[in-house]
Length: 518
Image 1 (tube, helix red, strand yellow):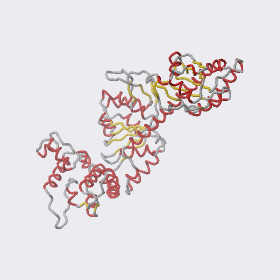
Image 2 (cartoon, one colour; image 1 turned 45 degrees about the vertical axis):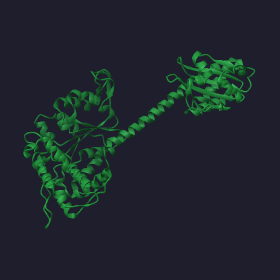
Image 3 (cartoon, helix red, strand yellow; image 1 turned 45 degrees about the horizontal axis):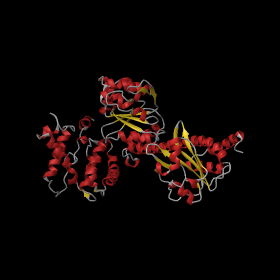
Image 4 (spheres, helix red, strand yellow; image 1 turned 180 degrees about the horizontal axis):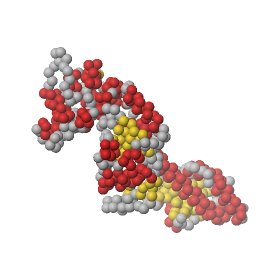
């Protein structure tokens, strides 16, 4: 039957149809073993893969038929498989009708022990590369062994292609799973502590803002978020992305003040290998990473004018070229920008481009400072205490009504960020305890009314309160002629050390000047 070329081709086609739709190594091998069993009376069938770099053999799938003792599915040195070694080295088939004459090979003894007396081994060749070997062994050599060998020579080419395709399919599947895991990780990282439950509000102003956020999120309209430092612009930007149709893409944040003009294009557009000194490989830029997602341009008002023109071109066309590459890349992203500046004033002062402003300001949402919505402070205090306590692994302190009242009366120049810092300090200093008015006096940067018979502040508390007042007057600046260190008459390094001891951050006070003007 196998001498008939037409019949042989029909059989090869039948085998090909049986294995072509398989999606795993085991199912491919089993389908092949089943089809061969109906044509060739083998007693053991296996496929070995060859790792040319490590010089190792491994099974493509679990062998069919009689098992061999001392042979595991773990990778083994090429020398351990003498027959596979021979066909991989010579790239020619090996047919041995009588193994009893080959007893000087260790592997032959294993085969003879289980009753296998004949074998055929064929190399798996694809594009002049040896993938491994295919083995057919018998208890008794078939009478038409030469015809079988000729048929299996042709079959091995077909099996090699199927094995190569399956290995490529498996590799691509694993890469896709790895990329999916990386994407999931990046999505979680991009949240940067975002939890909707952390945003508590009861004020009419914030209810109106959040109603607008819900309407805006369902569109691809560009949004500008305005408001003082620490009012939650970053949080709102993440929330818009999280409830939008682009939630499965990345939110890529661009800190505009940190973009050095010399690295602007490389950072946002990416670069090709060798584009400049030090470009040892290709780099994907921020805009390309945000394809299908959202670009968040934080503090857009601080972007220098020359860079604004480059940014405008990309926002208009959503097309750019990597540094050192002439090919255009088209991306699809949504834009959300944030600033603590009045951009219309910046346009009049010629520090911000009007065309970029109109490109970004399809929707403008202004986040009011905490001093304009003091009714939001108690719920924020509650949720921030719970979230920071989990983060710091300490019990949250308790706040009396008097202390909450003092906190609500504070002007909060640093807004929610300043409130969050206070909460963190109280968790560290008063874990699980009740916070007194004296505890918060030195942290609010202003005097808090004493209760009758209240204890006198300690020297450390008085020092912290004095430093806070200096930082408030200096607008959060530590060094310089008008900085807090100059006001206090101490070196900058000394002040920074004492600020760390008090748990004070200059960021809490940097919007003080803006707060006064407001």
